[in-house]
Length: 334
Image 1 (cartoon, rainbow, N blue to C red):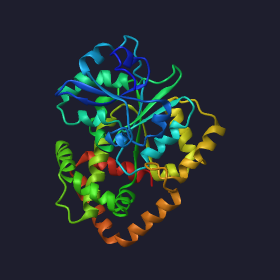
Image 2 (cartoon, rainbow, N blue to C red; image 1 turned 45 degrees about the horizontal axis):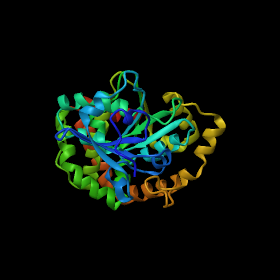
Image 3 (tube, rainbow, N blue to C red; image 1 turned 30 degrees about the horizontal axis):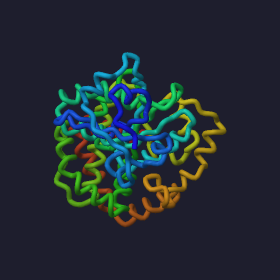
Image 4 (cartoon, rainbow, N blue to C red; image 1 turned 135 degrees about the vertical axis):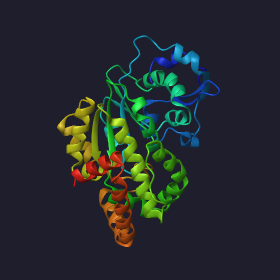
């Protein structure tokens, strides 16, 4: 087992992942990682501890104070609305030779539960910690959990680039209704999403069922992204459109992020084995065709409820400019 790293050692490269932070205790949890560990892990939240890891707790203030004056702050970001293939996209881009893909570290979610003035004390060092790589020519690509979109505007620096992934509301609702686990997650997050919507002055009618609840989830996550976008360097991508032209969209994303990528390399990634596996658990088969069939089946079974939920969103958007903007964006891609 490696010895406890000094605060200065944590800044040498990406070896010590800042996996979690606790502003109340003033601590950061560091987890030792190799390049292969980053590549294999679907998530860097506490699910990563299903296998043994070398971890240490350090004082946050000591780590932050040890940040070098020339520390990189050029991480690229993926924010998304959930259930839109963000893990797949992050994995595919991580196949590029000079990209370190960092998927869903817990630290960003930890900061969600603190006031903005507390987060502001952490964000500069957090940006730098997640810009570390294993080589000078490598770039870090950070994919967060969907809830972290709520503070995306605080996390993205003016000179950083981001990808915002979404799907149209009908596709999103159908995807939620197609899976038992996604329905359970929908119920578990309902109260928090209502609070998040209310913080943007948006209140939807009482949910009549899962279709309405899924529509509310889409509204919550999309308006969070719309609110964060501002004048930032953001590329918006509809995941269903991405699947329809995966090679072309990978090229767009690589160019947007400034990643070196050859046409041949992108073609190999777009047609490689990752596109035929379930990206959150690659031992299971999954594909764009299977996704399409599941969405079609769910839409056919729940067509009346989905139509009603979409009508509810359209009605709410009449007095909610941010929601109207989100719906217009989705319709513009039709």
